[in-house]
Length: 239
Image (tube, rainbow, N blue to C red):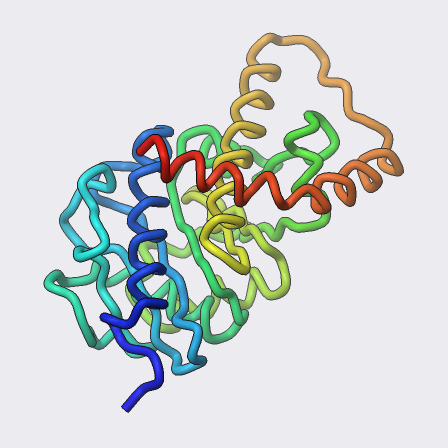
């Protein structure tokens, strides 16, 4: 018997938080139909994790819709199936990279940057972008739809210790030690990518900030993580 199960208070809270993150992402325009997936590992180090179900819009997902699966993708609890690519991508990143919360989206402005030769956000431009300085990996080589353990493991190996990976011609994956921290990063990553795309569209030459100052700002912003928790609780009150 596992120490933590689907109906325990701790897991129930994780299900509620994951469902909230999904509804918030829908509210903020970060979703794409019924595609893409968010997951969080259970706190008992059992190799099990919670993930959103196949076939539901993010805006309609509630705690009881969240599914529990193991590293092989077997459904352990929940009423819905899980989309195959979700299992392959998330299982590998949880297992090989040791990530607690894994958020994968095709959100528009971040994905737009994966289509460029640059492949990712320029972390020397906006203040929002600077929070991600030194935290990004880039998967240069699009390899088709992730429908195998091998492809999930390939993505995980690209990510390694980074918090964020830009998947060339595909989308992004954002990870964090908690749902609140990961969602905050996901939201501000898209905002940073949006203003970079808008600035590039202006046709004017972009003006990066000195690297030493970027390093300093990145440290400052990482020290403001209370903001992440406050933001998530604000979303809980309003959504």
